[in-house]
Amino acid sequence: MNNAMNRDLARLVARVERLDGPNAQKDPYRLKFHLMPPVGWLNDPNGLCKFRDEYHVFFQYGPFDATGGVKHWGHYKSQNLIDWEYLPPMLYPDESYDVHGAYSGSIYVEDDKMYLYYTGNIKHTGNYDYIKNGRGNNTCLAISEDGLQPISKQCLMENKDYPQGLSCHVRDPKVWRQDDTYYMVLGARTLQDRGEVLIFESKDKLNWSHCNTITTPQPFGYMWECPDLFELDGQWFLAVSPQGVQQTGDCYQNVYACGYFPLYGDFHGECSLGEFHAFDKGFDFYAPQSFLDGQRRIQFGWMGMPDAAYTNPTVQNGWQHCLTVPCELTARDGRILRNPVQELEALRGTKQMISVQSEASVCALMFDLVYEPQGEFELVVHNCVALSWDNGVLRMRLVNGGAGRTERVVHMDCPNKLRVLADISAVEIFINDGAEVLSTRCYPDAQQGICWKRGQGQATLWEIK
Image 1 (cartoon, rainbow, N blue to C red):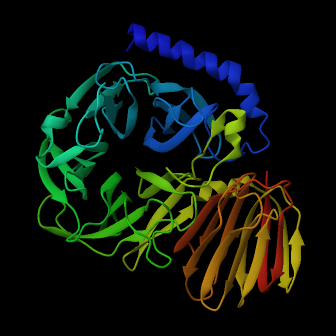
Image 2: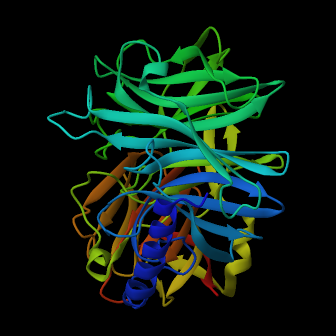
């Protein structure tokens, strides 16, 4: 693709990265083993795939505005999931059907080509609410032969091509092939403000027909974003990010939820959804996407939260947000376990064995910790993120540098294993081999390592290289 808008946007993005990038790179809260935008804004991971023996991660990228702005598809690639090369954006909002943003989507790899399915966003000028009118959410396709730039782009479906009774909000296509048929899921919001997922099918990747709609018997939020439908160990799961679900106890503590339903039956026929489970009960996790790497399923999430009351001080230096580390998804007893991919262990450096006896501490800038507690405990990362368990309640509190983040709780028996990944301004905590996860951004005054205020047990800490 090489139209005038594309050429101008490519020059503008390169210019802003060159001029504003050095200031962003000097920010003390830049991360070392998480993916970030070089400048500007990052949100949803897009188009995760393996292409010609290289991993590709795309992301919603607003290079001109650290608080949002018009979206492109930013681009990283890697041979090993730990050493990443930043590349120029793959998709620019340069056509009439995506001029207000190349929004989220997925990539299907076939015939040595990338098929990039995404949402082309249009906001018409006028007195519109942009929910029931005034917005175009077009399902679009770009094709790339080299994994670097598209050779073609086209609009496949517009609002009029979706089922009746929907608002303008239909987006985030995820595509896969099963047997001799291609399938696509799209997140949707009805005119009655009810979230659902649309299933489409195709024989040629171009012409799509609606074959099913999946939702819950009772309304569960007004919009289901970023759907992902996949099978683990014989069980199908539907992952979604529902908006508008009210907090109940320690469930749905964030402004928007993010998790999965077990799916029973035939996804393109008669089926039902089981109980909804959160992927992450921390402050910063939303809009995840997964892909198959051989037999394993790998997921990235956006380590952020739209419309949250808390903030990120990195905006002052011209950038905001990051992705989670890549995690492998597995299933156990109808639940999804989420754990860092094994490749991340190559980042482990100096190893320390710690016998926790009431109090202990280790100085480390970045670390990978495995802790097996025996009863109640409280540990603090960088004098900022406090994690404790007692009386059946696990708490994560931001005691300093939370930028508005306060507390998240999980009711559970005493954990038998914790894994903590700390990377400058990001902390991800995996509990009981990924049965629960708590992720948060944090902004400490100084990187101080980890200390136990109380607790017993054994721990192993590796400093990150």
